Image (cartoon, rainbow, N blue to C red; front, side):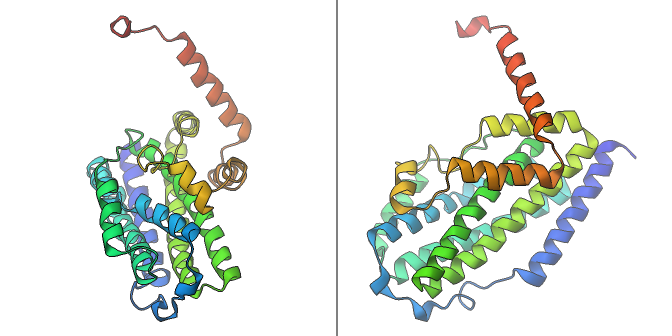
Length: 275
């Protein structure tokens, strides 16, 4: 059996494990598992509106995420079918945020139409060209999103917002599961090509940014005003280092890969066409 055939089998088994767990533990329903009747508009604020709207806008690029993901994974059954399930789960996130914004009165239908126009006037493009690179990216991005959503769940609990607590509990579980799947793919890739996979992880980390960064106007300012982001220290300690420990990449190994990448970039022959 070739390495690629073995990897395809491992991808398929990972996807089926993901599906089984999702169906048994995370098949939450938008209109049954969120206590919409407990929305308290008295708890509305401009800060909350900005925060939830920014989360919603980032989730609304789903058509781009899904279409690019489907094309990238079409030749790998396990990755492709995970992508389909991922798209469904992410669709719930955009919808549940939209419902909260409109049902709570934080945003009118007209204001949401303006948000849609803003979002769909720009297109998201994959930041990296291969499944392995995007698996490294997915592990970090989903991990960061989970961390941000967990903070929002804890905040909603402190503020007595039962609806937001339920929303962030469910979307947070989804994001944690997605990060876990991507970590599994990294482990598969490490077993097949450790040096190349570590180099890919180092490259992704050096060039990482969230999907909405560069697409959503005033993205970082929105996160700051709405208190919806995480700090660089939180990202490093709770996302990067956690991911490294989970997949079995040492910090020294990653540091060596980053140094090698920097050396190659520094010694690369300039392209005359660029000068």
